[in-house]
Amino acid sequence: MEQETSIVKEEKGFTFADFWYVIRKFWILIAAITLVATAAGTIYSFASTKPSYRSSSNAIVAVESETQAGTQDVDYDKSLRVVNTVGEFVHQEFVLESVAKEYNVSVGYLAGGVSASVSSSSFIITVSFVDADPDNAQKYCDAIVKSLIKVCENDEAVKKLKVTVSQTSPASPGALNTSSKKLYIIAGLGGGLVLGVIAAFIAEAVANKFSSKSDVEDHFPDIAVIGKFYQNKCMEDRNKKSHRRRAAKLVGNTVRELEPYNTLLSNIYYANPENPYKAVLVTSTEPEDLKTTTVANLAYCAATNGKKVVLIDFDVRKPTIHRTFRVEKENGLIDFIGGTSKEEDIIKHSESGVDIITPGLNVVNPVVLIQSEKIASLIKSLKEKYDYVFIDTPPVGVCNDALVLSKVADGVVFNIALAITKKSAAEESVKSLRQYGAKIIGLNLTKYPLHAKNERNASYYYNYYNTDSSEGEKEAVTAEKK
Image 1 (spheres, rainbow, N blue to C red):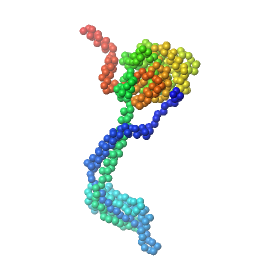
Image 2 (image 1 turned 60 degrees about the vertical axis):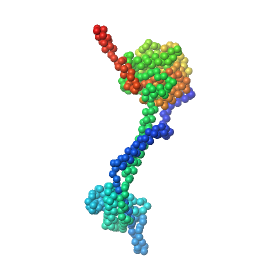
Image 3 (image 1 turned 90 degrees about the horizontal axis):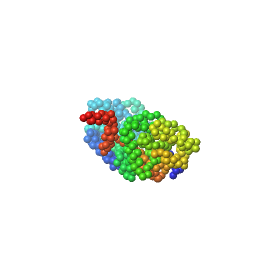
């Protein structure tokens, strides 16, 4: 299994199997939305669309030619070429103008109702007219065909081509035209299907992310939630403004800001008080789960409480701990593994009271670093000298570094960011950690909504610890005077 550590996990692309899985999972939702949209289209088509009637009549276009015997005959090839041109005449003003004058309507009105279709294999033109009145539809259709025949008989250019147009039969009585109704129904069906699929994928995206503490506990009933960090917009804004890759920011030295880390630190200790966890690895599924922010501030909190703490940055591909604690990146783990530096040489002392071990410069092959036997001996040595050895690693969803390093740690704290961490990804990460024999101390929830459902004490907590100490002293003095 350790050979797999050299392979960075690739993002699996969206496949047809994934698409079909979502469709099967939410088929009831898709069907319901499709039925509602189809019903809406049907109701609209019958309630809001006025009925219309269509009347049609056929006309034959023929081009005559003289035979060798001097008789007239039909030139079929020329007729097929001319029939499209004659079909275009139907929409022209010189055909519709006489009909408009006869029935006292506008040319535009006639042009909007008339249509002509021509078969590619015959020289028959089908002229149709659609109107709200079935009698008018038949009347206008018949008149337009007759006007077309008259124009072709009198037009000089058409005469030269020896084109004749004849009506095969009078216009048919106006019949109910249902094409517009069908169009609305089909649009409702198609639109509902598309909306249903979109809604299904939105529902899948929402359902595949943790939304609350109880949601996390339902998915991991055998792992305790040992930490909960409320969403801190100020901290997130400070992180966003950080140059290069975002470096974790240390919290202020106040009770309110340190209290969540004190709670997490206490829960780590009491998870196994007989044999306390000293080497604690913090990881997550994705970079957005704030695992580096957690481990950096956890170390800082422990140091503030008087503990002797060392923090090892094993996120060798994208290290940031050295920027957080403002120490030099040079002379780190890679130098220790290579034998050019001793253990005491790679430990850097920060102003925060936390000792830092960086990866060092030019880490060409991280696999060599994390698989080295010297790492286990280093962790063992540090545990004898420090109260806590905290380990920062890349996310499990990015590479296997955390899985391998979990073997040298006493326990693992796994971060889950609400509304960000995908359930399937977290489940896969926890499963992988267990396959490597990792001891999962508990789950730490980050980006927890301050006004989350069923969280009555959240606002109280923040209001309590946000109270200015000077105001408290004033109140005490006032009470004493009374």
